[in-house]
Length: 455
Image 1 (cartoon, one colour):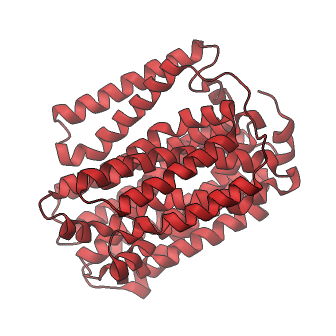
Image 2: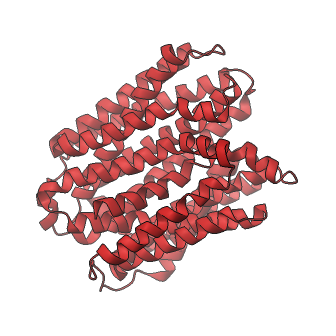
């Protein structure tokens, strides 16, 4: 069960970042399309992924996690094959949107299955391993993408999902329990559509604001419309008998604080992942392959830290893990801001920054996932994971938007724009550390307690 759910989580999160380094190769394949149009290859996945995490998590709790997981995994595999075979940009963007929607179904259903079938004694370690898969995939995306694009071209970053997906589908059909939840009424369809559309519009406005212009009608209309629809859906959910969004989860202080900290951490993480490979190729003039290897150490420490926190950290330790990890990331980001220059300094500067940053994110994301998941009763696992991951993706959209705004205000030929991004990451890391400290006031439940807790 752990291998199956972690494998599906790995390929879902991998595709949030693996395409970032493929833009030069995409531009050569589609010379008639503008760079702003090519960016939809990333945006379409991010928008659907963020928009559907919470609603599909609710559907998984109600309709059955096994069904939702296997359907989403099959859809993701088919969409990956369509991406690899895309004859034009419109085809590729549409297939990426389907891929993002499918990934949104895989994540909450996967962790819901894992938590519902793992003995209490091994729950924290299982969450740590699951978190390690997601952290490693997100951080390793640029590195793996660089290797694949350099050796086989951009289509290979999608084609690699097909055999992996087929193996996971066969394993799921054979190994997942036939009855894994479900049987409850489906959530409010009007609220589900409204919340999905609201999150999609909000992420779209934040992601594309630097391209459209922050004061343009498109950006303001998309962002304002997203906020209004999301607020209306939350208000409706608070009154509905079977809500689209489990707003009652936010009455749980541990879950609420962990979700806020996940948003802050996501903002810092996505800005860091977007800035780092671009700096290496633009200012230090690394090749795509070399830049991919340069960010690999951070991916490795991320996985090691995630597993260590999952295996060793007790519930009472989680607030300190978040606070110390993100404080360390804030300090190393400010140090990078102060010393980053046009002259390559891999061993003296880049390697320490990557090692500390990767470990900080791996430890923090695992601690937050553990705290949020174990604060909920089993019947709310999938919807809770969906909401926490949505918070992380919304924070990531804010981080990408802030990075785009900083890049727009500077020339990318020198290090100053990138230094400013790292300074912003330091501020976000300090904010995440401060929010993490609040978790100490609301200690997370032990895994055994989470098994029997009722809402």
